[in-house]
Length: 597
Image (cartoon, rainbow, N blue to C red):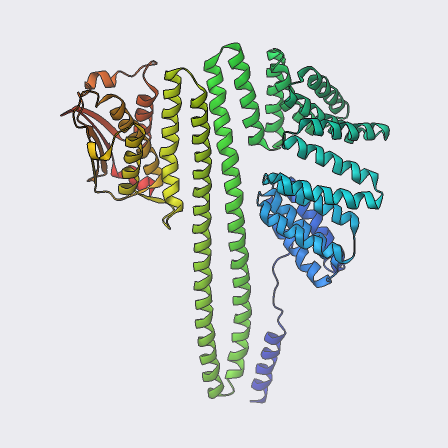
């Protein structure tokens, strides 16, 4: 019996002495016993390096570990630098407001010890994020404050860096003359100091300003000087950006072949280095479009326009993926913490079970306590899951809101462009394009106003779409019979978007051509289910012969080709019937709907 008791006590001591394991660190084992200041500095350097190679999630973990160590060190200098590291990460993933929040916290720590140079650097970083948010007034105020402090320190290099930043800000605000004056100061300074890296960097910015002012020969000369230095110093980064910008100065002077060759070099550089790949491709494809338009080769220009649009989509998707990765990272961190808590609780439960062998009453007490704890833990877990689901829904609604705003900007630009055109056919073409953009915008507007972020209420959407088109073409509701017959109330957005564009084209055609000789116009839009869904759009006009509609060719209207392409995208079968006017019927099979679900 005595041996049994000794065995139980030994097991109990072993369990009680078992360590609680912390979250895995990114630091190597060789730094396990290093001072916290060394470890936090190493983690911040690691975070900077990981951002440069695009490993954003791991970089975030490095900055957070550094911040945790800095809180333990509790020194303003180290804590401020860790805040600035987190701010840098948020700036790189495009969350500039969160970056500004962390920069402000870093500023507060540096102000405790009056670290003027670090305060100046932080103010400059905050200014850059405000500039990215297009709040140029606040960005300029932070740079001015930084400049005042830098002049007090007597650090001329720092003053010149801020002067260059002010020049960039002036150029961004289209104040090119002020930008040139400031850039001249910086280039003169760095030339006197023989600091050629900084000199040619500032000269590059000056060349861009001359290009924006339309002084193309001066801009070309400066770009070529920078390119020569970049080739001598083997600076691939500088060469790449010269190849992106120099073609714009050459195009204006008719040097199209050399401009195209530089564009090819820029594309190869972006592909090789991965530096802002899709953004570079978007800009270069736009330049190639201009080159081929100048040559009169509109077919090739259209090809590059399509590539530019695809690259723009890639930039947008990359931003969206970074935001989703941030949400996923937060979820994974919470999940790891939950597992650590579960391991800790397992250790505690084993301890309770060993002690419980001595007394039945203790066993009952521990069981009741454990059950209560588990109940509370489940409630907390459910609350966390609900909170994460709400955050994801909010993020999707914000995404739809931003897409809707972007489409509204495109629509406004098209409207402004149509007001400047004199050719009536061109005006009509631009306005039809505007209506297509508004048809897509209407879906995103509905998605961000509801909690259903992936499905569209087709009755409300098609009613709004038809009503807006009816008003656009001058028809009054009391003089028009509009019939909306919807059986399939909800559709996935991947089906609703092309379906809405098809309805937009068919209804637009009806308003333009069907009612010229009709006393009381009538339009019926139906969406019914049965082995898939069937869309019907019918007017009471003179009707179209099916043979005429089916004659697709290179001279077919864009609207007809768009309807055919979207129907194929939906695996649908399109049918035209001349029946009391024109009846378009599109059937989409059930298998295609399941793919979208």
